[in-house]
Image (cartoon, rainbow, N blue to C red; front, side):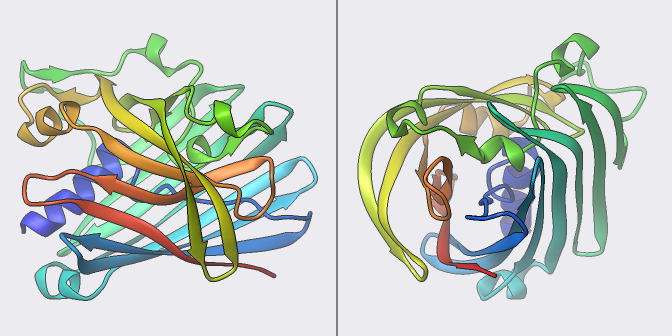
Length: 263
């Protein structure tokens, strides 16, 4: 039960575990990136993301499922996807969706964007009309100049030094939060299909709305520093996550890219 709560809360609240994606080297080509998820070094899940850029449009489709020890503890699986436009500044989402189940319970989200503003949102389960006093509701004014958790993690820049000098304003249909990045180091990474440099960022979570102030998990994460590695694994001007290390109360949760291929 604890493994399931950790995986789901990080996927939905932090937008990190399910978000890594990449971008293809040429139009009409699909880049497939595979990731492994581990908790205190033990495999608990896997994820695959397919990304396509076709002219001025893009799409990302992801699949995630429990694996290894995770299958023994909790049956979890789902999909996430986004589509939108490619602009000179990066990737502008138009439609984002998340749909997953865990131990027979289902969560789904469908969010529409236009010019960085949320124009529609449909989630299940919905927030109750009679929330706890400790719940911080999402305000309409907080849904301008935001991105979804998938395209928001695709950083388009020709300057590696700028990757970690930004704040990512994320909204997934339930929660609005900022991921505040700051530079930490440079590393080299090696996986099937890519050997090269990576930019390492420190990340702090700043919840804005759509959360319970008394949530023990969120209070713990607010006081922690996440380590996030970005690398241009498919094209030199698009940096995507290749490694994430998130502290938890029982040990580090990691998500690591294992292979990338272009078709």
